[in-house]
Image (cartoon, rainbow, N blue to C red; front, side, top):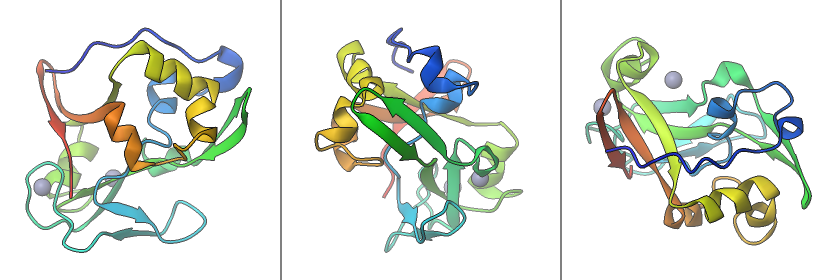
Length: 159
Ligand SMILES: [Zn+2]
Ligand SMILES: [Zn+2]
């Protein structure tokens, strides 16, 4: 089941036209992959990375939100942060396997915060400036990734 939305929203001035649905995925923990350069184009899989959906060996990393959205500059009262899409290791390609399923919208990924306090601390910039840098694994203690569609959702951990 997909945990309930906390109802916490960033200020419209922080989003600068980006939708909340996309903005909330930036900077979240990677699952089985990481960036291999300063931009968002080059990625690498972790050793023995498995597909976050089916557990088979991963073939590549999916950007969430999708790579075409680019990076996102989040202004907060604790400073400005350049946030990149989260990376999720998947099997297949943009047109096959689990990576294809995501691009065909047969499955979606959602990040859910454990509670409203955690989400409020993210948008304020407090977490980002106090030990939870972008993609910090520690964020997995304050929320989690879910995969699914319709009413069928499961938490995914990746590896
Ligand atoms: Zn798979
Ligand atoms: Zn992708």
